[in-house]
Length: 220
Image (cartoon, rainbow, N blue to C red; front, top):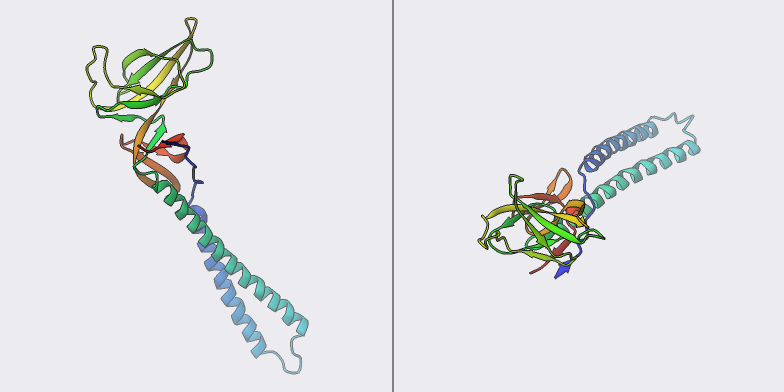
């Protein structure tokens, strides 16, 4: 079953650090303000007390400072919870097959490819590269948007060496080459992690991809 992934928003830890610092500074100002206001009340001239209008203005400032502290705390908690929810969603992808252009692990089982040839192509060739980037196979395949199973066999029908492979598609029209582009393939997700504030996936091939590089998910 193929599932279109819903990419969680990119998370960044920098705003959280700034929010924490700002909140501490604002809280410190709040304490200083409260101390000064109390001292003013205790030491005012009883023969010339502070005007009630001034007290009202100071109390309004007091309220604004307090509200600012609470707002910053609320925003910080929201950002932290949002990040946790995003990672929870990505963590649910572990064990599923993700489709991307990252190299795919071949262990003898067929690998599902998504050729997606360009419009107008009348001939397409699959190029298979090993971990060194060397083309180890070039074979004609049907022109189709449907998934294609690469069995990992060479021209003589013998299985190719186990390892990581990447795939691309050469497309032609009336003998003229139209394009060569990478082909997406399915790999199993073995880990989800936060890297530099961005949610990323570790595939069984060892490749690491950002979640927005995944175009489809499937469950076996």
